[in-house]
Image 1 (cartoon, rainbow, N blue to C red):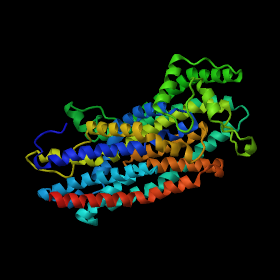
Image 2 (image 1 turned 180 degrees about the vertical axis):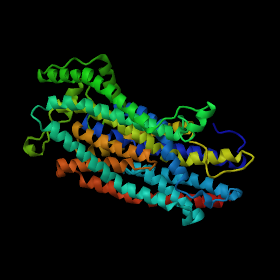
Image 3 (image 1 turned 90 degrees about the vertical axis):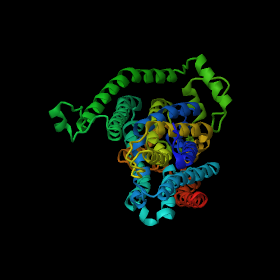
Image 4 (image 1 turned 30 degrees about the horizontal axis):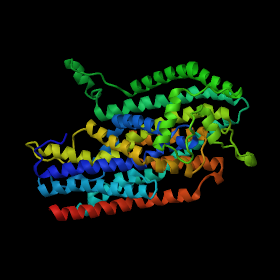
Length: 506
């Protein structure tokens, strides 16, 4: 994709794409633990299932929504008017700055991953962009109102996701877990939960894709276009809402008529101690997981068995000596009801993560590409980057994220899924769905939220409500410390790399 004819800027383009890929790998190794960490920790998913689902959902989120946040990273943090478009030196400074930003963010996240510290990819790239801009053009080169909004969101997002997770957990606890007929209640609410997740995803996909790619045409020009007969169909807000509710209704019917009877059959078989023999496919997957080392603490057994048995034998949350701390989610029936729902909500969380965090890894390289493309025109370089987000660059960044997950993601999944608190599928569902909602809401508003903050905030909040002693203060302090040092450290690394590169080439 990197064309010939970039002249004096060609080395910047090549190095920028190499560093961008390393940045994407570091994001995948650290941040992708957030969506599926709790599902793996609760036993709802194995690591192999986590990696496969993450690959699919992160890619989908990146393709459909990744352009929105990348647009914020590449255009709305640095004041591009501070750079003189007619000066070849200023053009180089801007491009080298974007390269330095990616390098600073990548180096810090790799260091953090080696130290087993879950850090925010959003903090890293925003801090790195600020670092090069200040040393390049001074504090006036920063659009501080954008930075203020982002910083506020960093503190507000864990609080918001935590409050929302507590609200949903309280609803689930009161209406289902503490009810005498909890299985019947669960069967009533499960179709609502599934349809709600799908409906909101459908709405957000259509709304954001329309904003990014403008495939629906311009509503403002609808009247003018209709006069000359060239108008295209214009999607309005009520179209999105209507389609989303229609999809919700269809999902509700499918889950109620087809999925709920399957859940009841599983619960009935479990009550009679009847577990079907594992299929040849289940045995093959179990052996594959063992060979690949895709386990956290316990080794996978030689013989594959029914997933419900694995869940109940290896993840026993019931502590007879501490009955007052049980919330009802520890029973076998509730774990069967909620484990697939948690996995489903984790997919929603991964979709939101792909839409949000791919922008962190490809925002600067997309800025480099957009400026270089204009430098080949007669009019000359245009730092304002009017080009729309390039789909192939989004996919390029997403491939790096997935590679980072498969190679290094296991370590941080351990921290998020097990080291912060012990989680059941019912609690994990409340955590995943509301953390994903918070991140996706920020992506729709083009605010790059920290998925780390949202997930950790939800995990800590729900765990505190359930049992304060269940929260590991040492792990939380480690994560909080990483939150505070990420922005300044990445800014310093970016600024230093910018300084030395400029000394070498300018």
